[in-house]
Length: 322
Image (tube, rainbow, N blue to C red; front, side):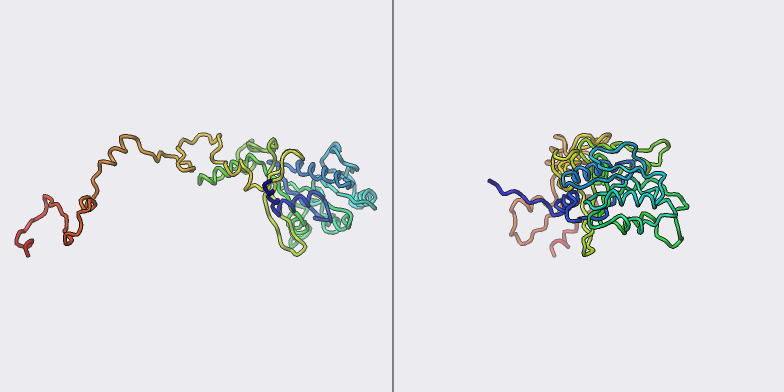
């Protein structure tokens, strides 16, 4: 039986993050967008929490109905910070819990909320925090408490022990095809800056999974970054590194490169024909190379110089005899 290849250390680290073991990440921050929302990552954490018998407390600012697998669903909109802290504290008291906040924008936009103090009041050795921040949603201008204070997103990045950024798999493959062919990377959604375009082609397409970018900070302070492909469902396929994903490696050879005509030479696609026709091949074989006689083995004759006189040459027999 052939020995099995051990998983990559980054995959083991992500699996440890999902399993919620040993306080792998007290504060996990998800930075999503309309191109790829963070719901697949939330489902993964909820399923992992149920498997590890962790109490799932969902704090909703924008979610209407409780997601499947959630133990406690708290409607946070309209509550004061003090009331919200009391409700969350009573729900998570004495049990291993995972707090999930569906969006941090109401908290980050409020000038009365200090994010550092708020998170400190929730976290404990038995409580982990998982929160989502929408990167393409603007904050209220009044949310900046001081001109010298860092922006909320900068503060959140500093506080988080793990940062997860989901990407659309079809869009990542489209960018890879452009890179391999030395073309400008395509842009999608709001970055296209086209009137009426909100989301791009392939946005939120999870039929084959999503790409997850991870930035994990160890206790030593050293950061670990990696990109993975998560299967669409738990148990359907394995988590693999993006560079080992078959469709990513073979992105330029897959069908679907629309609009460009060319040939494939040595595995690299070109926009013009590098081959020769039969007529061109015969013409090339009929070309007489310079000093062709020297290639017939007629050497060792005292360095004889082969030279054909041209019409413009002035031949002088006396100088030639000297």
